[in-house]
Length: 280
Image (tube, rainbow, N blue to C red; front, side, top):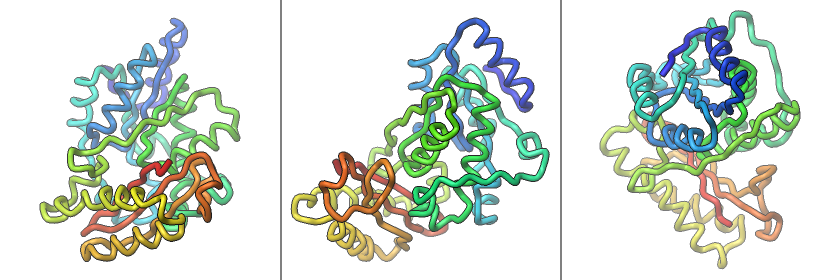
């Protein structure tokens, strides 16, 4: 596996592959890789000739400096995992390499960026859009792979690709979970033993609420879920939302859309965790 730290080098690598007529799959990450990330690599390997992964903790998408500082970084382990997974190249730039000049780009995605994560983390999705667009332009992939755990981020990236007429396919991939149901996340390593034991209740509560769909309206399901989370004193819930999957608009009736999801964000100890499940 080739490891590149400079834009010009990864561009040269990819250009050589494209010149040979090879298809390039791309998996952007912020490192601290786990089996969820590796599942994206595996999917990309099946659908492309060459797989490129990026490992870059993007500073401009963090609205909380402490969160950026504490974000886990395990570059050596990441390289080993990617090699074992059969990744062909990894791009691991510094912030100065990615942002040699002051960043002033601004994107407007409409209402989709102002709900849920956008409301809780002002400026977050602008930072995501800037780095993802830059990575797409650097790597020039045929397909790019994103997990559905960050479902709102996925929706934002899909919209950006459509709005800018970018010539690549965005491939959504299912959430990968631990055996007890906890959605895999790089942040999970920051949970202590007691917090880790409670964390699976995030997913279990969502499933419990979904099982009552036939008896509850969307607003009633939201209240039911919030009440259940309130029973767990260790959880500090930021939001529970039930939306359609396209525009992420809150639902009043189940017949408003073809597919609906329930979303949660909460604080557990020092760690902010998110999850979502398709309702139908």
